Image (cartoon, rainbow, N blue to C red; front, top):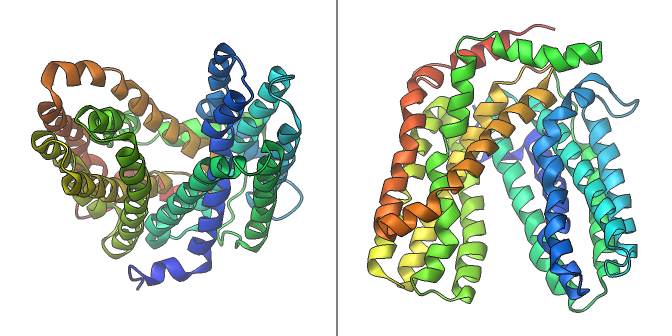
Length: 417
């Protein structure tokens, strides 16, 4: 029986550390790092604002996920072949964008940034599908955790480290180094194991498009399940949107926020996801969801306490540590839960669909938070944010009963080729 440590030591789970890194590396290179490059080249602010559209492929990836479910490249299996293809495409695109001048050719840079984002979103589709296909049920939480760890480390390298290097090296060299790192990730893909179960892929593009929808929506409670996915981390989304403005508003410096909320917060999130993955291996996904749902909700009260105390540095460290550890646990369990719902014939499309619904609540929940904070004040805002967990908790008995498997997961597991 897997223990909370040994579950991380098998080849299937370890390979996801590198694949998570590969997934996270391009994001900042078309986001904050690219914006810093544009600013350093004195590109007009209006043009920099338009570059935010580069993120569109990440929100629209479900539209071409069926193509990646339907077709298989003639090397390295159904999923790994596509992963290697997109890693190579990303390495080439990163090398090309570094050769361009944002000041002289901003739209060419914009086109290449969009190409990187499209390749990155496509890579994400296939890595998510591979993770759901290759892991055994007991490994889902650990696999989710190692993916998150690799992803966060990559964000640190392509974000903070890239900016530091840009003070010493040219942007061309910085992007070339990132391209080399992406190319090295191909070695991880080559060494990653093939899934033991190899379901028959859709035989036509029509089946790849409608098959995932039919497979999912024929389940009892399929629509309510989408609602559950949207609201499970609602309390986290409400509080997370206002965390940085809150810390600055009550008197902490930008240095405090950067070092504690970002650096220490990252370490805490990694610790939480790893601990969560180990716990899931011991007690299962359903029970973990119950425990982590309450922990990630009530962790918001740490910020309510900090709001009452004012700019108390040890209290800030404690609040950020508690919130990120609990949030990391909840993320590991929730990713594992969504993976368990996927029919392995259509993993790429179904997982992309589920994560799209998960993202909707994060975007919408942030809209009223500023009005809430102004109307309620910080202590009451974070206290009220706990109520965001109530809808998800009320749906837990239906979709993740404490003693038993999720009915939707059982249906997913029963799907034949």
